[in-house]
Image 1: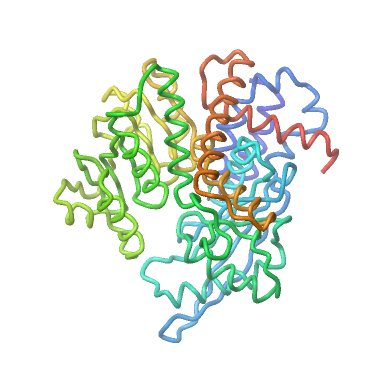
Image 2: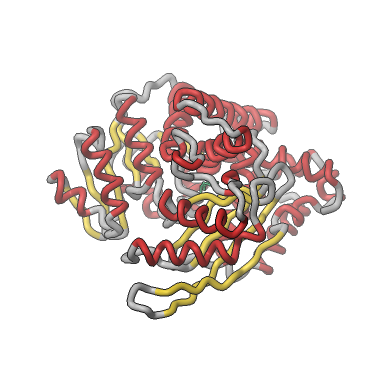
Amino acid sequence: MNAYLASVIENVKTKHANEPEFVQTVEEVLTSLEPVIDQHPEYEKVDLLNRMVEPERMFTFRVCWMADDGTWHTNTGWRCQFNGAIGPYKGGLRFQPNVYPGIIKFLGFEQTFKNSLTGLPIGGGKGGSDFDPAGKSDSEIMRFCQSFMQALYRYIGPDVDVPAGDMGVGAREIGYLYGEYRRLKGAFENGVLTGKGFSYGGSLIRPEATGYGAVYYLENVLKHEGEDIAGKTIACAGFGNVTWGICKKAAQLGAKVVTLSGPDGYIYDPDGVTTKEKIDYLVEMRSSGRNKVKDYADKFGVEFHPGEKPWGVKVDICMPSAMQNDVHMEQAKQIAANGVKYYIEVANMPTTNDALKFLMEQPGVIVAPSKAVNAGGVATSALEMAQNSERLVWTEEEVDKQLHQIMNTIYQMSVDAAEKYGLGYNLVAGANIAGFQRVADAMMAQGIF
Ligand code: GLU
């Protein structure tokens, strides 16, 4: 391996030994940049890679809140402003008990490349808290969000850093966060957050955007193989906002999502999550806060497999859309054995590095990486920011058209970047290279930073 590249990966391994998710993503991304680094010795001269794996800034803050029963609680909040070379830091907030700096950093690093791929002026950031929203009342969520924003508001802004939602943070949380920001700033700066409700500056299509974008990307892949999405069966994971958007768009195009999963297991619905009643029920399941996918099986009388993942089901397309490291070697082998041709990552880093490498090596399998496939969400967030700064509202058709175009461009840029460096049809390396290129150019132009 290229000596400079190897030394940077080694540095990260040593320095972040306690943050395996961050090491994993750095290793995956940097490894695929090898042909670029080989051809561009100028990057080593300015130590570009060590600068890229070091967040520009990351901070920790205390978040205290009071439960309904009067007890006081303390959580930790983080915001990582990873790379601002091409635009204000942009990326979601995740509220989940397993959140710690390693998760925030891996997400911030991925976000930098993903946001670059969108072609829009957004840098990479991520944040969150180890707060567990499960079973909390609405007023507890509100007080937590208010405290969180009290700690964060000085360090964000429409031209500085623009948080959004991620796991555990949806439209409700964004509403409470924005309300507190507005109160503290005394100004209607709604471009400071995205994923807002429509009434105060949210963009139409933003709720659907990640799922829709993933399906638009998938259509490009299928077209390359001379296939059509109509009639295809899809295995999805999770039942959150992203999976909901995939179900909705897939159904419109005549495909069907046949599995959903949750912490309790997975469901198999051979007829597909295709009717309005079923698709709407996902929203209900999410807002119930029960976090159980079995509810779907109970309601619609389909199979429920407790404690299992859906990757053993025979389908045309797998779209892991739940969380990081959902697909390990064991599941990857099952997927390959089932003859699945399309492995389309959706959640951030849903595949362990060895499983990803294994799937990419299978002759019949096409692998698409999450940082390209799920970029429609953040891209539409950037469209929300554009509408907020113009003080305009775009129609659903306009936003959807732009989203569709962005996804086609991301796909094409990835294909071209891999081709350019002699890697053939390699969507994973192509996305990393294309995402890297724009950030690298901007960092080179801006000098030592
Ligand atoms: N959390 C989402 C992501 O991973 C959305 C970020 C955003 O809209 O800023 O890209």
